[in-house]
Length: 298
Image (cartoon, rainbow, N blue to C red):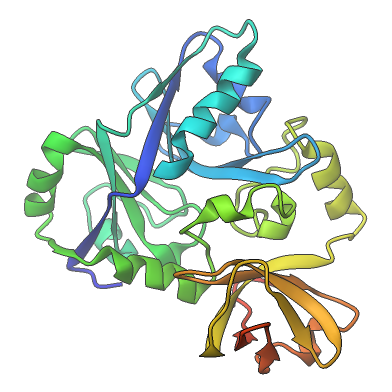
């Protein structure tokens, strides 16, 4: 990631939650610990189904008198609907702020060069009254600036940065093994823990109950994790969503996200993933390779 570049992510949306019960409300729903979200620390989290299946993930930033959630823009309305369904008598306000804010990414090296910065995942500070923080998932994907629209370009000028193609950022995420695009294709198809949420620092196993906690903890504690979401590389032909992946005569996975950055849910055993990792594998209409992120222990 170039220290002199900034990537503006127009396809990110924002939900703002505040109110007397906002903190407790989020604590009872999301996978991470809301107590860890402060003026100096932002987190990554998810909402699961009651069975522990993945729905939506997002960054959580303490902002003004509430919490700003940064998610894929196509998921904003569903996220608000989920909150509305669980609201009951909770005293909260939940609003779509996608027209008020924009997410941009800079390199971690640029972030730590700023005055008062700290080289720590999730560390958050204010830049011209807007939050900027090291990505809490993995330091290799840089730092995020959440800016009001009217301040963004002046901030870019003051930081002495040039706007670069956002695809460079998405390519980096894919190379690292973090899904960022078309996440709706994962909804309810895999467990949250199969989506590597633990390794991406999105689950706090000590926080207590949240939606989907029972199955998530059972899989973790009983070592029942049999599949993981992994990036795949197209070697020949093409791939389509839901295509089966085969190694010899064994079905070892299925394509869930086909374009533009493909990911598949992959079996870890029977046969062992070590037998087919980085090998040419067959889909219905193409040849692929599955590769494992360096930060993920299989």
